[in-house]
Length: 288
Image: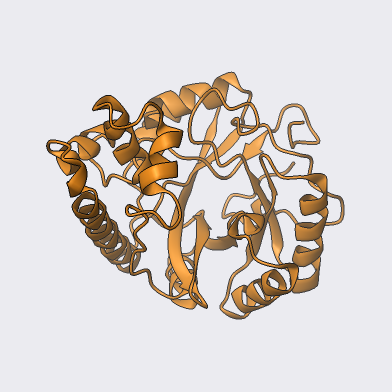
């Protein structure tokens, strides 16, 4: 079911392009969003806004409104957590400096992954993974594609199962900043900090309540209530977290690649009633 209560308005505030680990270029992503009937889209690549300018140019005249977005990695009590930043000033000097530090963290991680997989004797693994990533920082999916290309494994899923998944040699944890610091980067740049896909962290309900409370105390303003692929039970639970911590409700597909019907642009479960939408608090509020 598409989120919007109004057929003219379809809001998707979480997706990825080739600027990070998505399969589509920013231009192709915008074209697909338009085809899917999305009216308002936030491009939220991992720790980079490199795709925003191209996406904005592609969106011009398309009828689609593009919102500044990014998905930042951080640490909370030894867990890697993601925070989506929305509607920030992309020219803010301090914010851009923070993104540069995040970018170097990602490059350090990519080099470590390549080093750990060196025993596979894949020629120019890091360089080729970087090419797959469009010249940006390669992540595990990009390394997986090179392993498939070289015949090390038959499919990307096998690459994760044997070499890149949790606990495998290529599962490298980056040195991310703490959650309060990342939240403040976003807020100081005039943006809205949103706790991304809370049910994907595999935390117990009790731990997730603690995370949400800590996020609010750190200055976080929103939480992704409706995300593609989640159950109705998860939807209700996260909605209750939003109410409990007085967080604004966000929504997004977390789209990465075509062909996955459970994770398509603009196709998200309808938001429960009684929540305050995050888009009502944008600098140019969306009335939906």
